Image (tube, helix red, strand yellow):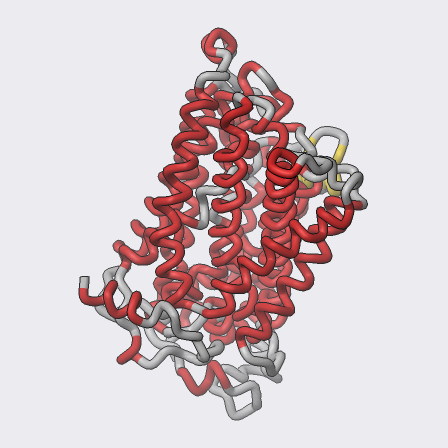
Amino acid sequence: MATDTAVESRAGALETRGIEPVPEAERTGRPGQLFWVWFAANISILGLPLGATLVAIQGLTFWQAAIVAVIGSVGSFAIVGAVSIAGRRGGAPGLTLSRAVFGVHGNAGPTVVSLLSRLGWETVNTTTAAFALLSLCAIVFGTASDAKAAPVLTIVCIAVFVVCTVVVSGLGHAVLVAVQRWATWIFGALNIVVAVNLVATIDWSAVGAAEPASVGAMIAGVGTIAAGTGIGWANASADMSRYQSPAVRNGSLVLSAAAGAGIPLVLLIGLGSLLSAGDPTLAQADDPVAAIRSMLPAWMAVPYLLAAFGGLLLSNHLSVYSAGLTTLTLGIRIKRVYAVVVDVIVTFAGAAYFMLVADNFYGPFIAFISLLAVPITAWVGVFGVDMLRRRHYDPAGLMDLRRTSVYWYRAGIEPRALLAWAAGIVTGYLFTTAGTGEDVWFTGPFANTWPGQNGLGWLITLAVAGGLYGLLGGARTASK
C-alpha cells in the first residue's frame, strides 16, 4: 500500500526521464500496478469484432471461441509478462534493452518495426474512438454521423481524442499508472452495462445450433487472437515494468499481465462470438462502433459510446507512451514528451485517412496485425532466449551508441541475433496470409499448407528465431 501511495503522490508530476535506466532506488513498483495497467489497456470494444471473426469467418462455435480466447489472449499476455522481466532487471524500456541483444546499431530494425506496430495500433484506436465521438455528436447535436459527410467535425473528433491521449501519455509513467487504475473502474462499469444489454440481443437458438469447427480452425483462431492481443504488446512490456522493484518475483509479473489483460479480453471476445452467432455483420463492419450500436436500444447509445471512447483512450495511453520511448531509442534527440507529440501527429494523419479517404476499416486492421505480428514474434524469440542466460544489463552500455559501448559487438551489430531475427521473419511470412476474405494483402507460398491454414506461422517464427539464435551461440555469450 505504501508503494501505491508513493506512486499516486507523484501522479501529477511530469516524467522527465527518457530511455535511460531507472536508478534502483526509484524502482518501487509492485505487480498490482501492472495488473491495472494491462486491464485498462484491454477493455476497448475492439475485442468484440475479434471475437466475431472466430464465429463468422473461422466457423467456431461459442464454446470453441471461448477456449480459443483463453489460450490466445491469456497465453500471449503471459509472454508479455515474461518479457517484462527484462524491464525489472535492467530498468530500461524494452527496445532500449534490446540493444544488448542486437547491438547498438543492429537494434534499429526491431525498433522501427516496434514503432510501426505502436503507430498502427494507435491509428486503429484513434479511428475507432473518433467514430464513437462522431456518433455521440450526432445524438446530442443532431450532426451528420457519416465521417465523409462531416469532414470538419471528423477532424475535430480525432483532435479531441489525440489531445486526451497526450495529456496522460505526455506526463508519463506515474500519471499513466494512476489514471489507468482509477479509470478502469469507471469505464469498466460502463462496459458491464453495455454488455448486459448486448446479451439481450443474442440469438441463442443460432448459438445452440452451430456445428463445431475442426481443431485446425481452433488452432488458427488462437493465432488470430494472439496476434491481435498480446503479441503486439510484447516488445512494449518492459516500458512499464522498468519501475518494478528488484524484489518482485518473475511469476508475479507474468501473472499480472496474463490476468490483467486476460480477464477483460476473454469476456469481450466471448461476447463478440455470441453476438456474431446470429448476425455475422459485426465481423465485416467497416465501422465496428456503429455496428455494435445498432444492436443496442436507443437509450443505451450515449453510455455505450462513452464506454467505447473511454476504453480506447485507456489503450491508447499505454501505446503512445511506449511509442514515445521507442522513438527515442532510434537515437532521435528530443525530450520524451515531444516524442509523444510527434507520434500522435502521425496517428492523427492516419486516422484522418481511414475516416475520410479509405473505403474499408476492418480489413486493413486484420492485415496489419498479421503482417507485423511476424517480425515482433521473431524479436520475442531472440530476446526471450537471450533472457534465459542474461541477468544483468550494463546501464552505460545501453546508452552509449559509440564503439566504446560494451554492446558494440561488430560495427555496432550482433550478427547472430540479426540473422536469427531475419530468418524467423522470412520463415514466418512463408506461412502467413495477411487479410480476410477478398481483402488479402499478402499470401506466403506455404500459406495453404496445414501449418499455414491453421495459423501456425507465428509459432514457427518464434521457434526458428529463438532456436537459431541459441544454436548460433548467442545465448551462451549473452551474459558477458
